[in-house]
Image (cartoon, rainbow, N blue to C red; front, side):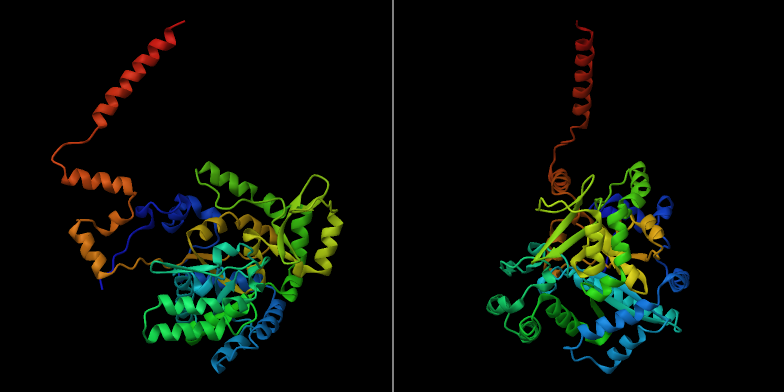
Length: 440
């Protein structure tokens, strides 16, 4: 197997903000806490230990224990779960949507990166326990983003009229998927095992959240991956003071204004848009945005005007009905978990970099940010074709028009560089413009 590494910047696929972070550009140092290095984790451990609310450990343990009650866990896994109550236990976390059958392959890369980092930390700091965590995005409501997966040239899609947070979708509708899997998968041992795995998880679970937990647990059962569904009343109850503060003070928007301004001054674009209230309201199989007006609030799609006190009282009595958006979720996660590092993709890293000031204002430790591993697999057959066309791996990432131009120049005997002609035309138009400007 031939392995080639390519700098993210050379691909032209990723934002300048992400590329500069990956290259440890000094001008970005104010946007994060510690850069990902194995030595920096000791500093992160010390900071998290001093700022983390240890009462959350018991709450986490009780909720996770309940969520795993239908799963047959090993003694090693149960011991790991018990350790979350200990002050020398910390987590490394990745998060992702509940894509059907895991969805894109980088979902697996995320989890593997998380597990590998925990192994490295265990070797470096044996006095501490490190737990790899998959934080399920059970509260997402964009079903079309997660209701399918691709295999070769086929798209397998779950069609449903269900609405609301996807984690609560009933999986009894998925029986038809089995026949599609049998049709498109090759007839071999691996296919049989995957289809059996699908039946024993998705079809034997009542909802997508439980199905995904069962499925991913079986995939990574050797590595003691901890899977969390944070859409739980007890977990949100512990976070309700922060929910109230967001409603009362537009806290995330105000605390991140200086960061967004600085990013703009450095010619970076913000990855995610901050709102006056970065919360959704969950009710009757719907997840609707909370909209702040001058003197009142609205629930998206409704004209009923709500006073601030009404929203705050609802948070106090029913915190489970309030759902953080993509930006606020970062703080919910880091508040709950004794977490040291978040592992995400390029877009995730970019929006986390907007939020350091908000974390400081909330007095929540900002985690180390580590990009997930990125891998492009090229078959020997594909490689032979590329070599025949004299196309190297770096060329694969070029814009198609640019690659076509390069290859056309290589094979053409004519010099088709029009740069000189362009300069002549540019000067002629400038001359005509100067004459026109003098005409009355």
